Structure formats: structure tokens, C-alpha cells
Image (tube, rainbow, N blue to C red; front, side, top):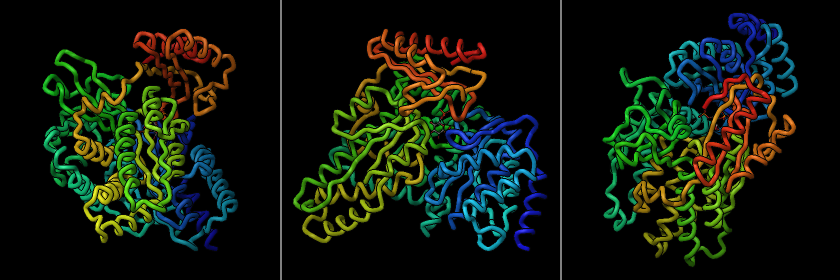
Length: 563
Ligand code: G16
């Protein structure tokens, strides 16, 4: 009887969100993305999916409406699992099928079959909870309503609107709520600002004197991150933050000539930044504030920037964490403590110079395909896993096991003669980092505060940080093709498997340039093929990238290749 009621509720509700004629959606690198005006049925169905996931796991699930770095007219939906990470990949084929079900009858059929296969308590026997967030895109409000309809179409499921948020804030809330901890936005801001203060209090005094470089100017991409940073900056001391491209009237369009994606790919000065900012430490967030890059404007006449990308953020964190671990394990109190497994996770986009630098530090570096869902999973295999994509997406993960051991150790040090020792301080710093940096997903706001605290600790200017190693010149281009799925890759996207013959050509072209390296892959967030090339000179990297673009265009393209 209850199941009957559930079926008719779903049929009735789904019929109000028909699939747009001829549309096809696919669950890509980070959920569904498309033109915002055609996404209502997709977001409705993502609501159904999230409610089923909550029933299955018995935990709160997150649903975030955003298209992150994409243009303002796009939108999308990301789903967060109970641990705050991306939805388990095993459910992606079902997500795809659901999004493309031609009508409500088919949709019901898919749901009923999936519920049986997955043994999901269906028809009101269990309650479910979905936390909703959206960024500032104009299409977000209507899509949020569609998501609510989808959630409410599953009996027992409740939608909780958490408001306009950054993506990482929603992921953090899901994780916290499922751990039985406080999970509002003000709790997030309180935790982040408190742990930042703690790290700043642990900066050695002599280093503070050397580094009174507290001015930081942040490009908010005209997205949700700018406003959140304005709130956060009122809660932190020791930094002089100003925010540009906040999205307020007159400041410009979301992600247009600004934001982390633009700055990282184009390597030029973003809108709103001019000669006044020469030599100043600058940072860019992306549209939903899950990516962070830094940059420096070298001279008043320069259009180009010195980019400090995700690889360099990763390297800074790696140096800092390694130093804390070295101090911690040097003292006599480290006897009988199990060694820590520290792992670094990168993708093929990582600049070759960054990987070489990290290996020179003696660190274990592993590679995964593009997408936080892959990097995060790999990083979680370590006691401390640091992952970053070159585009600025990343975080530092601490295993529960390592953290509980570290807490006990820190308490022992505090109650013995070692209180206040370097060893004790190193333990406290690592504990503070685990509180500051988002354990659910890459987070530009908490990442930014960690960068700032580490720079203060090191006594480094942005220039000194940038000199950790010198990037190999690189170029990233896009090619519009008829079917991006015609390209199939292997070995963490470094080799093309299909179409055949392409990899041999890439190898031959790369071999023509000293330090030449190149790969192509289909984007999972845009309808294009991405081409990445690096070489020992900018001219060589540009020429290598261009020759591969021309080839891809010839083999697969629409004749409209562009940057
Ligand atoms: C998303 C993913 C990132 C990925 C990026 C680009 O970021 O979360 O892991 O690097 O897309 O992916 P692709 O090259 O497949 O288009 P965001 O910030 O757009 O959500």
C-alpha cells in the first residue's frame, strides 16, 4: 500500500519535470553541467537520487547547485556523500540513466529496479535527509525548487535548504552533520577562523618580525566566495584582506575575465586588478570557491602574471607538513610511535617541475585521472594525504587513526616536561591544520587561510614561495569536437587509447622538443577536448599544443578549435 502511494507520488511529480526534447545529460567530472535553462528535469532527478542515497546510507546527503568555473548561464548539480566527499562512483551509471529517462514511466521503472537491486528501504519505512545549497547563479533559485520537488517525491525524505553557500561549505556541513557535530555556516566560519588563529599563535616570534607582509588582495570571481570571504575576514586578525570581483552590482559577471580558472588557464591579469597591485600578494577563487590559485603582477606594464598554481600550493603545504613531522619524530618522545605515511597525489596536469621538486624532498608522489573524486580517494589511503590539481582544487587529508594518535601524543607532551617544546608545538600545528583545512573536499577559503598561516610561519614572501622551483613552460588549449567521448585514455590520462594512431603522433611531436610532454583528454565539465603541453621554452610548449590541437581537429573536430 505504502509502495503504491510512493509510485503514484513519483509518477505524478516527475511528469512535472519533463526531459527537454533532444537533450542528453552525463554525470561528468563533478556531476551534471549544462545550460541552466534546460536543467530543471536533471536537478529534479538529482533530488530523487540524493534522497535514495540518503535512504540507502541512513545518513544526510548534500546536493549543491552550481556550475563552478563555467559561465554564468550554465548551471549544474554536485552530490555529496555522507563523508562529505563526492557521490560514490558506483552510483554514477544510475545517475546517468535517471537523468536521461525519457518520461516518468521509465523513470519510475528505473527507480523501482534500482531500489530492489540496492536493497533500499523504500515507501516510507525510513527517513532521509538532503542538505541543499546553491551558488549565486540566477538560475539557481528555480533549480533549487526543482531539487526540493525531487526530494519530496520520495516518502520520508526531507529537504533542508542551507542557503547560498560555497560548494565546500555544503560538503563540510554534510560531513559534520553525519559526525553528530554542529554544522551551520556560522559553525564553519567559527572553526576555520579559530584554527587559523591557533596556527598564527604558533608562528615563531622571530619569523613574524621578518614577514610583515600581511596585505592580500583576493579576486572573488564575482561568485559566492567573495561575499563569504568578506564575512570570514571580520573574524580573523593578522591579515589585511581586500576582496575584488565580489559580484556586487557593477563589479562584473561571474567567472568572466576573472576567477581561478581564467587566471590559471590564461595566465593574465584578471579584471579589476591593475598597476596598483604590482608586487602585492594576490589570489583568485573560482565561481563556487572550491579552487584557489595565487598570482603576482610583475610590473605595471605587464598583462601577464606570475602564476602560483595548485602545484605550488601543494608544495608549500608539503614542505610545512614534512617539517612538522620531522620535528615531531626527532625527539625522544617519538620512540615506539609508528611511522607516518605521507602521500602526495597529483594529476597529469601537474607541472613536471613540481613533481621533480616533491620527489627531491623524498616524498611519495602518485597520479590519478582528473577529478577530485579520484584524487580524494587516493589521498585518503595515507595517514596524511595532500592532493592538488594544478587548477587549484585540493586539500590535506588526515586519517582518523593518525589524528587520534596525534591527539593522545599531544596530550602526553602537554602534561610532561615537554609542554611548549618544539615537538609539542609541531603536534599542535598539525592538529590545527586538520581543523582548518576542509576534510571533505578542496576549499578555497580554508586553503587560503592555510597558505597565509604557512607563509607567516616560513617567513616567506610570495616571491620567495614562487621560487621553490621554476615551472616548465606549459600551454593548455581546448578543441571543440563532434563527440568528445570518442577520445578514450589510460594511465591516469597520459595515454590515448582511442582513436588509434593519435598517441603515436603525440609521442612523435613531443619528442621534437626538449622536456616535451603532451596529453589530451575529454573534459567532464565542458563539451570539448583539453590539450596540455609543456616543454623547456614557452614557444616550444605553444607550438606542441598547437600541433596537437590541429591534429585532434582534423581527426575529430568541428573545425572550430579555440583556446
Ligand atoms: C571540476 C572538478 C575538478 C576538475 C575540473 C575540470 O572542478 O571538481 O576536479 O579539475 O572540474 O574538469 P574537466 O577538465 O573534466 O572539465 P569545478 O571547480 O569546475 O567543479
